[in-house]
Image (tube, rainbow, N blue to C red; front, side, top):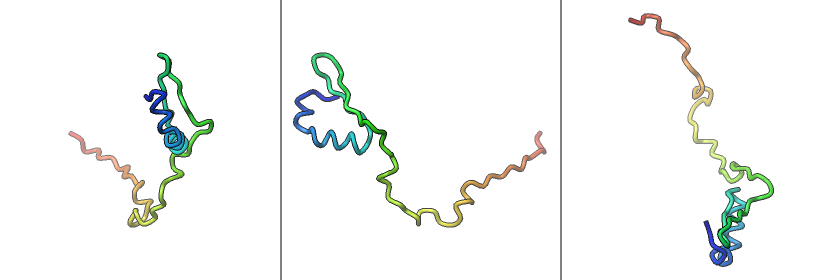
Length: 74
């Protein structure tokens, strides 16, 4: 939570961070809380770097499940 002086000192950085992350910023003034939020929701995945070489092999192998049941229980 920020106070108005901190907001004033870093307003452009704070506003940019709200726009980039979608995380609201709260400011306490006269005992009340004010919140700066983006008007539109932010896509959390927009800043991800594509990494096609991360998965080695067939991606389908990651989701394959064995459904065999061992009925030889004690």
